[in-house]
Length: 489
Image (cartoon, rainbow, N blue to C red; front, side, top):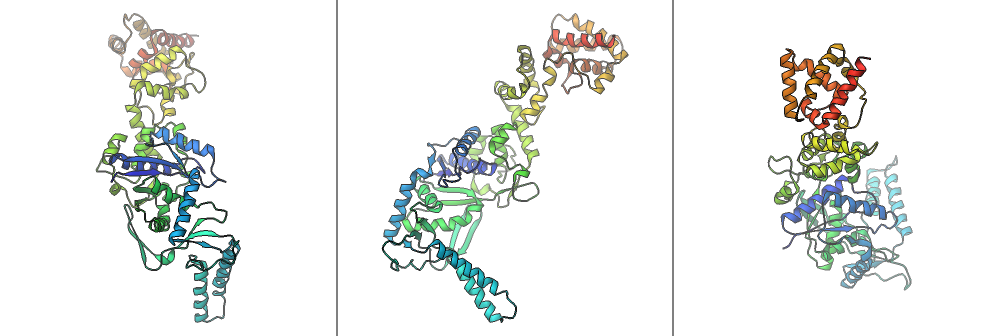
């Protein structure tokens, strides 16, 4: 059997990280088994579905590199097929026309609630209380239509819905890939509406018809859909279709164990892109949110596709950990291609003004050596601040202290040594600094701070010799000259 999975988001909002993880699991399972990964946009809720949300979902999937093997299917466009199946079920006797009105159903619920409240009244016997609660439970419980066994219509022109004839008594069992054996009573299922009175198909019907027609063999989705599975399987049975295998994944929780919300960081997937996370880092992090394989902590997409299995999904909810995401992102920043990383950093580097050619040259030279100086793109971009055109440099308190009279004298002497270098490289610069310290019996701790202060103003920067090389002879000596001149005024 060829494996076919699908991701089926609703375009009533953005693609959040819970949905992104579901998409990733489906993608990896299909790739592990050389199958197909499909995408379906479930836009049947016409009032809440928007083109903007659809576009954002597609953009988020593209950013993550979770490319479907076929063109995305728009569910609403298949309404005719959904109706066709509902009518076929009526002809088979597995669905029926129900003439109960919304008003009648609401009156039934209201009566049930009245009896439930009446059971709480003082002065009634235990028998009366039990009888009232039994009646309430029937009225408020799953609806079984009086027309399910073929009762005639009230009149020829009476409006109707089409309902599924729910399974009769006994257990209903789902063998779930994550949750194991899950069991409910058939009496817990209602005669579910398949076509509304206006002829439009319901979500439950559309999902099953689309999964069948798309050839979906494995449904991997959030465990908030587990109850839906018991309602959807009878539709497969009613049509005589093969039932896919199900795996219901626990939802992601916040660090405090509560249901994930915006205060925990439940943002859209694209928001994480804007915050400076790489797609490969996002995938590696989401993969380990509820799935494990041996002791390996970080996976590339290819590594994950080679080993992903449903058996590795945990039953317990995973907890969002932004600090861990940052650590994984830092790992992938270090692995990133220099050209790609520079293009990703550039918008952050140019947030205030475009880079000059000189700044670009310095940053490109430093980039291979500074990839570890931030967990996100904005953090990493900030680490290059000392390489921008910032003359005259504004000194922080520590830098000003380093450039007192004694520090300026040492800086002036070192400047003369650096000026004479025939070749400007970190290696020759380091040798010159070492020779200067030896000749004057100085330690690097006496020379380094004033030099670093003059070059960076106190901004964080790596080893001083590479900093001098990246700045270039003219810029480096110019910054030193600025401080010497200012200190002697």
